[in-house]
Amino acid sequence: MAEASSLSPPTLRRLEVAAALKRHREALELTTAEVLDATGFSASKLSRIETGNRRVQIPDLVRLCELYGLDNDEQERLTKLVGEARRTTRKPVVDNPDYTDLELAASAIDDYKTTIITGLLQTPDYTVALFRRFQPNIPNDLMEKVINDRRRRQEDIFRRPHPPRLNFVMDEAAIRRVVGGRSTMRGQLEHLARLSSEGPLTLQVIPFSVGAHPGMDGLFTIMSFDEAIRDRVYVDGLLPSTFLVAMEDLQRYRSLFGQLQELSLNPEESERLIGSVARAL
Image 1 (cartoon, rainbow, N blue to C red):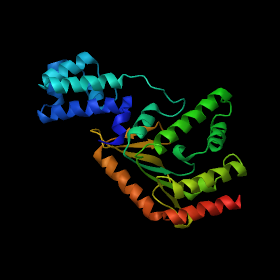
Image 2 (image 1 turned 180 degrees about the vertical axis):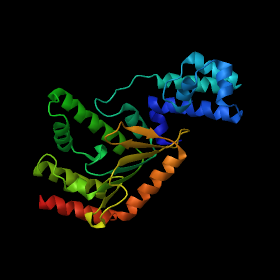
Image 3 (image 1 turned 90 degrees about the vertical axis):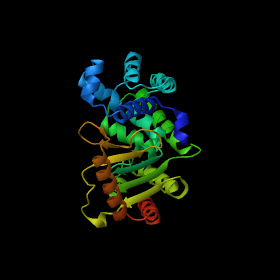
Image 4 (image 1 turned 90 degrees about the horizontal axis):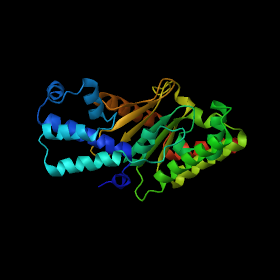
């Protein structure tokens, strides 16, 4: 069992229930229309249950378990998971709580950013400078909570006995753009260099010399799991952030991430470039 399983974040448990219910329906070769007729659910309700976009209610779970002819052991297992999915946990002030739950449970994370350093690799000073630019009027107490949330996220990932496989790719613009002044940016780059040489991760930089490349207009994170849930892509940007779980989307983004890795400097070359930019500040 993966290390992530013992962490049991509510989002993961909710998605595990969703995947199990869909798997049981498909094993019986029941169509969604047949389930709707038998349960009286609306199409949107069943869809949200099977995608994990809503927590299933116990009466609805019982109805589906009976319809699918599940034995007592499986019903008890799913009921327990539903209870865990309802568990209240600390919600981050800014970061998407579903994202942070899944990040904590992932067995592999492939992350690509264009012009900023990704959250898991940020120093506190860099985070403050970034948020002060995006939200100039953010209160000091809220800013402190953001910093604490980021620090906990980083500790939860990097201090796990068995951290996930971590691959980070960023455009050279992310290390060249000075955020928060020269001292802050130098500290951020020195932090990246230390993580690259000592941390449980792979960090690569796409140099300006490659010119145009297929990742210039987007940023995304691919999360893979050893759990009985589907891998997914988190796409961020100006439009509302979203998770993609369709197989064709996963294949497209995995192919794109592979292309970006091939265009990047290797980890040793990337570390040298980061160090060089830091020393020039």
